[in-house]
Image 1 (cartoon, rainbow, N blue to C red):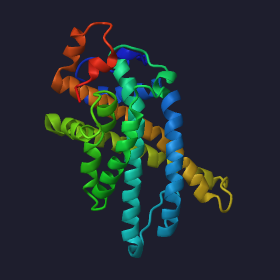
Image 2: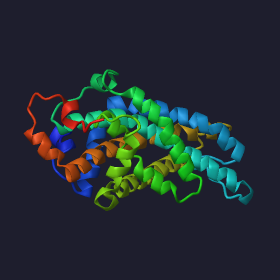
Image 3: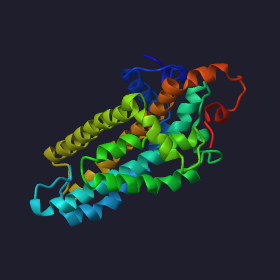
Image 4: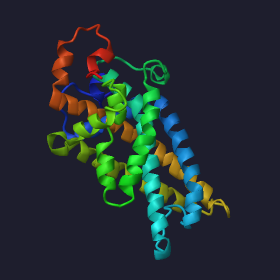
Length: 281
């Protein structure tokens, strides 16, 4: 089995679809200590924020689904708000994931302290664009099918800030540009990654809840709390995995379309990482 070193995580060449997915998993595995606590905290906050909305709509755990036509409109709004919170969390996690991927690409190890250190991380710019991503996803999700378009195009916002060192206003434009290159390859792969993680999350959350229920391990009145904790747990891993996929996709698209691998091979060994990967402001 390949180790989670710099070459295994992100080879300095164009990758196949399978290699991209493997690289994202290896990146996540190599930085669990930094990514999962942050992802877990954000996923739990998301569950708490969605709880009153779910109660108002009248959906039940563990899948929070409703078939009542009278509540269909509010339920669709609930789905749109959930899509917005998902996108915001993945954007926040994309900051450390992108920096870890950038270091892996240039062959420099990244410690947990490096990822948590605020200096040079551009957290301010990431926090500034986070609500922009959320509002965009909310508006894209309200009509329904246009959710796919919004999600597919916004994966590169955090990497554009953390790696390309772009100004905040240029980061969403850069994300859309890279997503649409090579016939929308990155956009399609981000949707594929989301589908894979969504199936895993739904399967695990539903399976664990059903198993606990069948064993009578969920006390009366605790079904909602247990479902929230299960969803926070599976989302913690899913969101971190999607952030890692965004980081890998961003760099691989730059390698494929901008010759980033050639640029890195010609760069001085002691050149700063921000200089190697930055594309300008």
